[in-house]
Amino acid sequence: MLDYKRIGKLITIERQKINLTQEQLSEELFVTRQAISKWERGQCMPDYDSLICLSKIFSISLNELVAGERLGISNRHKINTIFISLLKEKEQKRIIITILFTLFLFLSLFSFFLYYFISTYNKFHVYKFYGESENYSITNMLGIFSNENAYLKLNILETTQTFDVIEIYYLKNN
Image 1 (cartoon, rainbow, N blue to C red):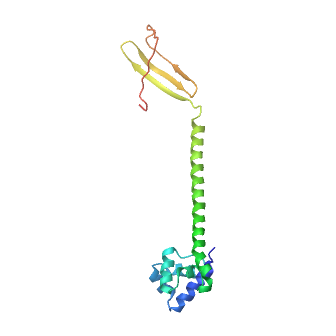
Image 2: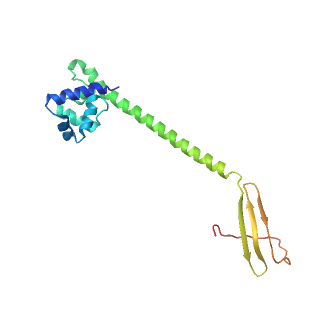
Image 3: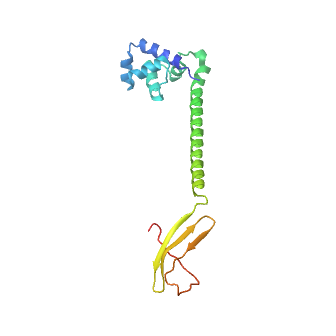
């Protein structure tokens, strides 16, 4: 785990060694003076590009900057493990974000399909049909449809005809 306060103290010490103000350093890094202040107080961590620029400006290694201290040869193991721990921390955050996003997506889809199923299950739809031909005329024919049954109520004006089969064609939304 990174110690933001140690890193901030090192940034402050190294900035003061080369006689730069927070404003001057912020101009070199293309960030705000407030960002430099937050880094130095340990409230947040510089991004990777800023860390690289800081290591060049201060003439220290990136490992030392991330460790928050100047490292000697005796701390060789610490130098090798700093970035590994940083990468592990970033990877853990990425995994957590991926899991949360996947969970959110799954719950959203589940909610949508549950709502759709509940709102459409066994609902009745009523349609009004009408039409004419040479042999018959139909007005106010009702069709009631559900998932299980369909009912037709015919109002045929000419009752002299008998029908064995009735074919119904209709235009949806018209």
